[in-house]
Length: 130
Image (cartoon, rainbow, N blue to C red; front, side, top):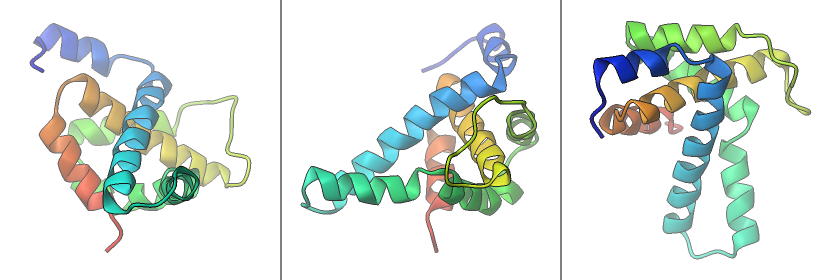
């Protein structure tokens, strides 16, 4: 998808928690697809595996892995989302984990909305545990 500079600027100006909302869906779909293709287990087992990767603590660790590799623009999106005030918080995770996860999701949402699928794939690969 190719978007105009005006559209890219519009996406960049979006509320960072809206970008995180989109990014959460994109990451969830990516992880569920990866898990479904990697093994022939039942849906309940697949859900458990995906949930282990798409939660605030795991995303916080993933964010720490990719932070040094973010572009200046991506870093700006990450920090705006991480520092945004939210009325919600993760039930079983720290506020720090939740905020880092929001930053990561915002970067994912941003890249998805501007059509940077190759960059998105690079980040997903960096997010994998080594």
